[in-house]
Image (cartoon, rainbow over all chains, first blue to last red; front, side, top):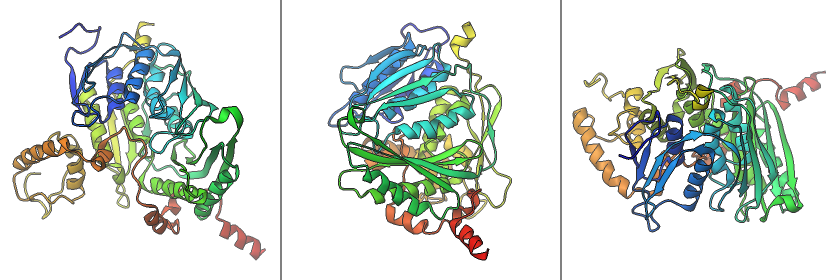
Length: 370
Length: 114
């Protein structure tokens, strides 16, 4: 086998297929473990990595030092030997096949453990149906990081850019640099104190925004807590190249955890329907979750696994244990050898579990040297 | 765990998750008791069978299946709009999760009483 960096393990971990692609690259980077991913869409009409995955690998190359990435001729095999996370200033032009959220989200796993602060500008589409939107990251994922001691991080929206043409620009700044996430315990379901949200539009009539807010409020009027949805209408140069509109709702708890849902409208959709759909999704997400929502779970659990050699605990609900959860835990075990223990809570009225994880004692390599 | 403690096998989710020869999909099915696999057969046999079965299936994995396990997909799965409307017609089931401001109705009543 080829030469290897100091501290990295000698053997490749081998994976197959394109699933969990970003997670695997991230976990490899955090653990310093070399990986080989093969059979990437090998039976597809267009085999191999997609342009956005290649773009993501470029981004990884830019924020690390000493990483080696080898992509086979057909693109169906990737070998990745991770370097150290260095961060710094960088501008990443995202292809229009994926929104900026696709690239920003995995950066959140790496940024706090970097040598230099992350200051990355992402250009491209800022909203989509399937990936994290700007507000979802700002109000949904960053609060999770805060619970683990990453307090100074922000995502600034410089320009919005709706699909298909995009033209948006966001700036990710993570100023917190820590050796490892703090050990976190959350055994109770935090009560929700208010719901807030933002309805935004680019290059369409501002009435769309108000109609979305009406739709959402209609659904949420019965929940019995403060609902505050702001209108965010973008005009002119900063509103990107395409017309678009969408809404993000966040249910905030006293403790700082929050649940969120989001959606964007297609042409032909009725704004009121999108507003109420997102509101219903929020209620559903709350009912399914205990402390973190389903799309916050990977981030929270990853931070728990790479934490200090101490036991962290997180309450999760029975409904959160789904296929994604299983595949997440399996991948984490492959990289770190850590299993997440599930214990039923001491409450006959509840079907919740406490996910107990012993941190691997990962240390930010840069902190060790300093 | 191997024996028939209860009529239907009760799976320990903690162990099931890390049985690599069972696909995530099947893990959830078994745990929720939806599996139609032969409950009486020996665990080992069953596992081996499933491993084979799913290898074949994975090759021609459908989009729907990918949706279930792939963490590349950020937005979680939701039921259809109509179902959610029915489910959340009133928010009673979630009442315990919210605190703070009294509902509109209550405050209206309070004003009426005055």
